[in-house]
Image (cartoon, rainbow over all chains, first blue to last red; front, side, top):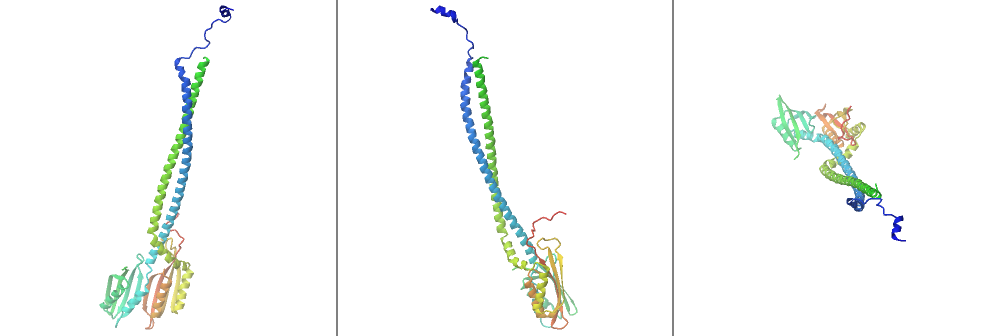
Amino acid sequence: MSDYLCHDFKTPRTDTSRRLPNSFRVVPVAFYLAMVAGAYFVTMDIIGYRAANQDKIKYDQIKAQHDAEKAKLEEQTGGLNVETARGTEIAKWIEGTRVMQPIFVKIARSITGESRLGELILERNEQLPNQLVLSMKLTDANISDVQQIQTNLEQLNYRAYSPQQSKQGDVIDYRSNLVWQQR
Amino acid sequence: MNGKQLACVMLMMIIGVVTYTGQIVHKKADAVRASATKAKEAAETADSDRQIAEITSKRVDAESEEIRRFLDTWTPQIDNIQTGQEVEEAVQASIRAAKLYVDSQKFEPKTSGGTTRVIPRIIKASIIAEDEYPKTMNWLGEIEKKLPLARITVCRITPGKDTKSIRLELSLDVPIVNLKADPTERPAKS
């Protein structure tokens, strides 16, 4: 058979699909690039995501630990503050409980000679309980006796403030504020 | 649309899907990274707060050491007297021990007026005694020693009926201390 005959059966035909424009040839390249870049970035992001998640859990735990320690310390501080407040209130009370008996004894021992003690009152100041109001009535006494009492009271760390004395006949009426001073 | 064009469109769609997925994953990773950074900052802040609390606690501990030691020293004395009956018994026992002649004695409870939670109640004792000077003075010293928390409010001494004796009029406040009370607690609003 000649070639010519063959052409009778298979005549040359035009293409069924046209060639793609040149710009479209980039598409497969872009596809491969996208696949590679996508795989890289997604993998890196997943690794980063997991690491960040672990970090978050770790830092949350550290925070919880610090918060617990802080709460414990604050509780301790609160306890100390309560105890300090209790101590302060007790100390305030005790400040006004200094013994009076030595004052009476000291005054009684200071009375010498002819003088006599008619009345002796020690009263605690309600507003300032560490201060005492001393009132006494001395019969047949003189000023030096009163001064002797004041000097003797200073040995007990008590200082007489704003002393007032008046003499009516043989009786000296003496009154002063006794303030305790630490030396 | 021929097969090649269709293939191109498919590839472009896949590129789009891959890019979109990548973006979403990246955003999620970024969000988690941001929250991890926040968690780190919060942990650092918590650490700083803990350090401040530790310093404060140490400072308060050091500053209050003396007053707490003072309170510890007084606690046994405070625990000894917890009721009005104990006050009465202590006073009467000291009177019996001193064989002091007592004209009258009165014990009455009173509130501290809400000024302090630690001392909610006070037992006010009023005693009038008349006896020899040394005996009376020794008893006064003894009662002050026995009830160190007692606060003598008024003490009046006058000559007694005979020359040897003196008359003592004593008024003392004995606190009933509640060491479990919290003085820092604010009073409840009524």
